[in-house]
Length: 561
Image (cartoon, rainbow, N blue to C red):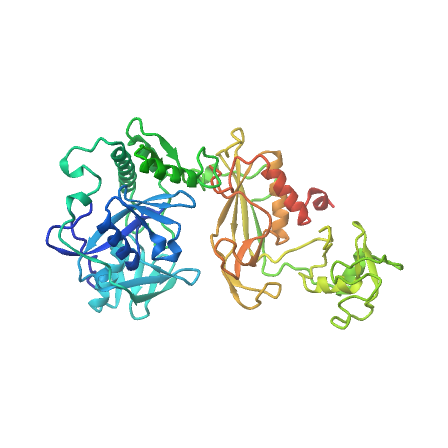
């Protein structure tokens, strides 16, 4: 198949304006964290154009036309999008395309993401797909645009050439993007004074020029580090460009203060929302300020050769695997409960915290649950903690749980027996790497790699027989190679073997159900920073995770016993 070229992107004159007396479609786009220009919807672009005609120096409130964009404002003078609740600043641009291309016809091509939602392609990819579709090509190779994907029009699907994974594809008719004819008057040019060849020296324009210079430096740095064709990925773009902010700061004019916009969980001197609002207020007052880009989290260490990877001292092996079925065959529920309880002949007149009936009366499960040999009025006391419950209530609680032969007190969470979880089968690897974590400069690092594939839920899971997903694997986690770090590793290995590290449930991050999630034992997944709260330095982390392991019944005392 002859590969169609991408839609004609018309050369523009100056700062984003079309040649005179030529009709062009206008598409406004914003730069995401993966250095890709993402188009606003046609409705939003119409709104931006209408504001632009009224006041080229003004601001555009995107929430007026799209409820999902309520926090966002575009400053037309600095050509940046500002998020009010976090202070995040992103460059925007005004692009022009041929009226006969996809945006001129209101055609949007979208792919289905992991959550079942539809995501629009970048505009150049959308135009390329539409060109091939109009020429009735059966398929399209996107490698010319730097993506390892094939588009199949017969099945309306997208296939990753490396993994062979397919996603659904759809073509949707929407509002056509706005049309513009001729050039924009000089009074609407950006920034002020650009057409004269001499930059304006007022403080307002010093701000605008400094912001533009910083943005241009960021974009130039990103272009120099653009990925080679075939390496990019539509769903998981390449690594972040951490050197961009360095070039941006170097371009800030002398005398213009820089407010570093840091991550919400970071320790920067300026809260991001405060920094953003300060910038807008100073701009309105005619005072110069420049907001620098937020730093990127350092998730992974520098590359490590195989010869530099060593076993962890004092910890045998480098790998542990869990099999498909690692549950103890449970005995009779009554026998398990009786093993840990002592019968109480004269119970006190207080509530059973399971059924909320008085202990001196019959269990609330009378008539609901029947077990031979367990009368509803029987009361027992747990051996170590001393809390009292109806025996029938504890039998009901155990029968609704993992049924692994262990029992957990519902009041104080004390664990009787060896608690196991519902973690799906997978592999845990651990080894030393010759790099240090922040706050532990005198020690090397223990790296843990968890890998769990997708599969089918078992009888112990929420929806037996239904497929579960495993997003983000393999997951890399880090510990310092000191005495306490190795202790945590040993206990994490025990927790892994007991299937307690992960479980199947609903993701707090994405809202996806029937997926593998962490199970209340926190891990550090950020290697060289702590911008997300999942990195170092964190002086209390090792003690906190030891307490979490103890709460799951995993401790050195129990392990030795």
